[in-house]
Length: 358
Ligand code: BGC
Image (cartoon, rainbow, N blue to C red; front, side, top):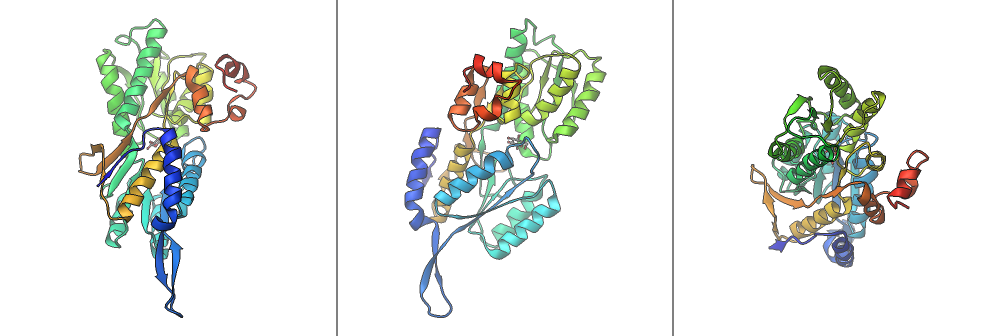
């Protein structure tokens, strides 16, 4: 039985060394050549499907390079594809990957498309790891503790309101959430609501959930009109949605506490500028390192001890997320998850100086 042990970026650095050292043993298989009957070592194939390539989301700029580096360093042949917000494409990619052969699949669900792929993979004897988003039928789910992610978002709203001298119990708060087809969205929302409820807060308006940043902007415009422009705070589920919401608040000359997650470039800039109270930072390397540990264990026939279990029984390896307010942006930069060059553009330069981002 494998005990899960990744807990920090420092641990990741150490673990990747171990994994890289084991690569020759763990990430290869013996294959017979037809001609001579000799055996050659072939790298094991890790097939990965990312959900979308929207600008500002984490997948292409964050997870892809972290997965590419981590899987390759551990000796795997990484086949990383993107479904480009298309469930049919998701299925086609999966079929092509499975035909070519996968020793393990790491799937980030897109609007429920992951479940059918997990079923096919399992039927073909390929283990499936639901990466970041839950997928029915997966062997393991590796993600951040998403209820806690939401709780941190709720805390940002409460802290932001209190700092602005407003009582959360009477403040006019717009609640928004992520795409309901993503199992994470409910976990984020439940976590946020637990903190907001405890502070006596209630929604002045609840928006339809989406991960589409442009759509979030349209929905927020409608919400803004519905509450007659009376907005004291906005519970936003991620930085991408927050950015669209903030641009509308800007247009209306309002600066209020807004939550987020992903520590994206736009999100960190909004945090530095005081337009977003904070972002929940989820270091990609931690998630990749956890996935690598699970893969190595599965492929050597071990089971992994998860620290949580989903309602459907899937073992859940949950990593602790990190709240990031303006004072803490420099830590994200120090981790190498963002660069001062990207963050400190002309408009943000003064804030970077104030908060020691260099
Ligand atoms: C992820 C978030 C991301 C969102 C939209 C969620 O499942 O956990 O990090 O912002 O999807 O892509």
